[in-house]
Length: 449
Image 1 (cartoon, rainbow, N blue to C red):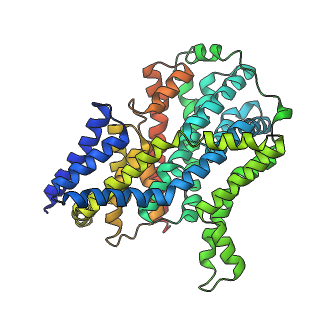
Image 2: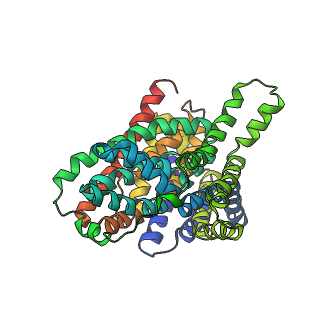
Image 3: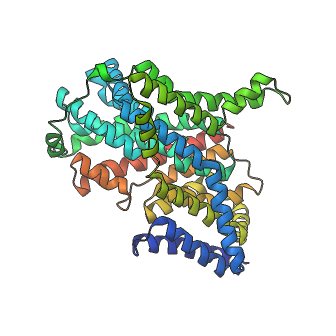
């Protein structure tokens, strides 16, 4: 297969996905499935092999990350329903003081975002932002934009969020290295897109921007602090899986014949085991210990899994799409061409993900599709750290905050903004997150990481 034909088939398949999602309004899973079938047939694969390849790719991806996402969702649900997110917010705000509320909201977003999806974190924390803005007489955007930016940063760069876990599996990255490298990228990205950009843009917006939404939230009743779990135990519960995964990753430096305790630590540091232990811990620290019944804990842990069905199907379809690209030989041809043209791998991964982000809106679809194209290039002897490629893919996948992204409208409606104001706030801060993330990846590669 020629390079031109490979590129034509890959671009055509992506265009089919975009057309089916945007114009035909098909579910992303069905769109990716149909595009995968058409791609396989167009590449000359036998019909039985086309279906088998899709099933193998989808099964492999879901086998690696489905349980991680489910367990992380349970942990996030307990943080939400117990009031742990409120406790973290109240404590951090009290420590920061009125002069650094925007920085405090950024820290809150980073901490809470480790355990919950963006949509959940936004729904939980934005009412708190309105309450703080009302009490301190500050513009709502000055308080809400930093926490929004921080939640988005964590979604793009830190496990166990779906897009990051998908890319981690595709690139065979080490989760321990990804956690600390993701933290290195996340902090400057959150600072620049959050407090610093909020201080720049808020004075340049109309004085009534967000005022109507703030008024609508004026009757919110905050939770009684006495009913909330303690800050220390909540923070310990949130960080427990990260600590376990980092410790498990560190054991690979302990020699070829580790002792029993090292093997136990390596087992506990597996993402599935670490998150399972953290979920069980949250059932006790944020549930039973606070007077919640076992039946209630069971109900919450079951309830949060229902909405995951569509997400997991979409992730599986992304894996199947990537498998079709690889089995058909298209990815291999494109990989050799990219190597011959000396396209920087980080720039390629970021650019492809950014293009898909604009095309389909979903960051998860952008990361899964990009991983299917970029992963074979890494197999051709790339010297770039796979963790950096994960982060570069995430940088592209969060860029632009386009209007076909559900987050655009969620932010617009919740903060009471016009479409132009949402473009100047949400879309710009999303782009800043991606640009800073890519710059940090290039810098770390230059430093030999």
